[in-house]
Length: 405
Ligand code: PHE
Image 1 (cartoon, rainbow, N blue to C red):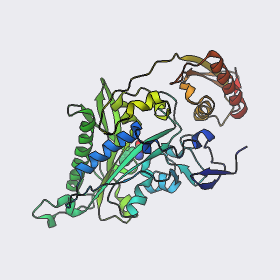
Image 2 (image 1 turned 60 degrees about the vertical axis):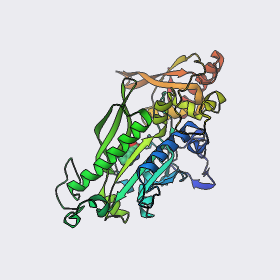
Image 3 (image 1 turned 180 degrees about the vertical axis):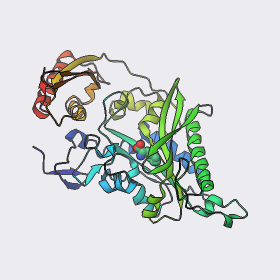
């Protein structure tokens, strides 16, 4: 049975039918890896902040951007979705994709949840850094908690057109049809100026970290809160890697946040993804390691130091399959992944659905998952693995109502 209240950072939350935060997930709230001195996520955050500080400087010589990296991770549905114009029936709202505290609150799924609040408070140029939570698949690059940085920049008409002699002839706004290239309310030249600034900024960031010769490409993307939108991909180790999403902020959001006279851009990036590429870290679980073998490699004062992570040793993998019949309704793979995480913890490296079979006569479906066990810090014994695997079988039948084959 569920507890009636959840305690997070000194605040109590009532639980209800939407609650799906597990005790394990709760244990990550407040860890704040990005604030931990010498942690690679702290270094990479600092490198990006320093870049933004040096790129945007006020006429008086101060950095334009402010940094907010201690905002509480529990946000309302309004902040995470509605304020960002995410449609009511959008897939990203699904219970199987998010960690809900209750029907009103969830653990933020992205740092964009803070955009409106920050703009309403009057910030025009800001970075938000924090832990975000998503119910995802399990492999070397996915973890239910990771860290994002959000960047938002708003500009006045003067900032956009200031360099023109006849600036009074230009307006940020007009009323035309929305197209692939712009929102209906935006003047194309204003959007071009913003797009240029945004892309220069992010390409500059990529070059600062990965060298000026790094290959880049912009890919058209879709987000409910920006239009047009793009993703930046970099070619790293012979592979195109998506490193961030960005775009021109939907004007409706600015109007709703009392900044309707300005226009702006936003970007969001995952710190783990950048750090894994910057330091050659092979597995996302390592960020959560308290092992000195991991942390000691990042013990330097100058955050811009680029080291290559050296794997301490490679422990053997152990794969074990589990097959079960699904209940007639209400089963989601995400529930199984959470259960495996809760029981297996960091012993589990991957879970893959390897086979789906539907019995033609009985109209029953079965799933077969391969669970790959491997700890990053020590060699697992066969007994340990068997024990956990058995617990997963038992809990799956008990909680998810599946029938082990
Ligand atoms: N919030 C988006 C995500 O998590 C990233 C994003 C931020 C895209 C800001 C556009 C603008 O995927």
